[in-house]
Image (cartoon, rainbow, N blue to C red; front, side, top):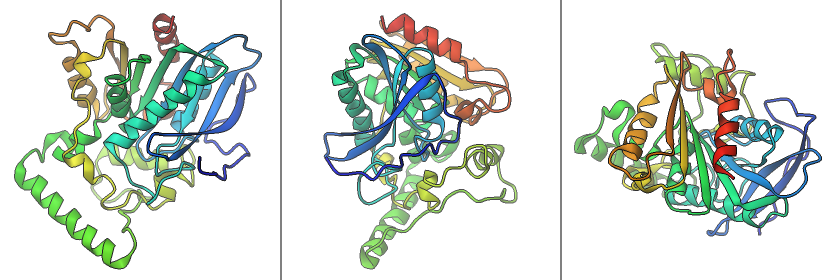
Amino acid sequence: MQNRNLVTEWDKTFPKSEHVDHSKVTFCNRYGIALAADLYAPKNADGKLPALAVSGPFGAVKEQASGLYAQTMAERGFLTLAFDPSYTGESGGEPRNVASPDINTEDFQAAVDFLSVCDKADPDRIGLIGICGFGGMALNAASLDTRIKATVTSTMYNMSRISANGYFDADDNEEARYAAKTAMNAQRTADYQSGTYASAGALPDDYPEGAPQFLKDYIDYYRRPRGFHPRSQGEGKGWNVTGCMSFLNQPICNYTNEIRSAVLMIHGEKAHSLYFSQDEFKKMTTDSEFADNKELMIIPDAVHTDLYDGGDKNYIPWDKLEGFFYQYLK
């Protein structure tokens, strides 16, 4: 286990709850990377609790949306663990600001390892919450790890699909993928020669001219007091240029149609990313013998980032999440 210098004071983008005990913990994944997490427990809880591992959005840290989800679900009686994925936030891994479909799926499974032996957790009642790009990773973990009894995805992205095909599958052709691979491999050579990893840069502070609405929504969350945190977006540097390269030809969610455990997918009606959840839900429920415990809940008027923190109309359906997990984490 690597020693991590964790921030001990409250540095979240949301207020601390008086109804929840909070502590910082670390655990190790199978690749030897130490992951940093916030453990939330309802005050004065007795016995072993149903437990949830939470992560996302892609590029965020546990002090943002995943921590809000974790603390809120702890207020509702769950033991929750919000963690920073490998290579990001307070977690270990070098170089920084890279992602991996394999390692980031393993991060969720390592969180399940931790909860399975935690004194406060019931190992037979463990679920996941994955937000944005880590919604896809949570589904990938649920299709692999039979210890996971229920999974919620919120405003889900499939990072392999968008990396290989572009937004709305507009670049789903060999020529576009070849151009992307050529550019990233040229960058690999330059990085090796320089001994550093070029950064793709974080989101701008202001809207670029002609920016699509979803980019404005991201800026409104990550670059404004609403959701800004100094460790998110790669501590303001963004991902490495080659940081997501492996997603180009390493798909996730290949066998989501074989997930036997319960899945609730939540997405905003006006989210640019809605098609990810719609298509994955169709895959999980079409000609599948495991369709009965799958559900897609579309939130009227909500955009992608409204499900990070509730937006301006409390869009996150907390009662639905609570009821779903209590139903399936029996």
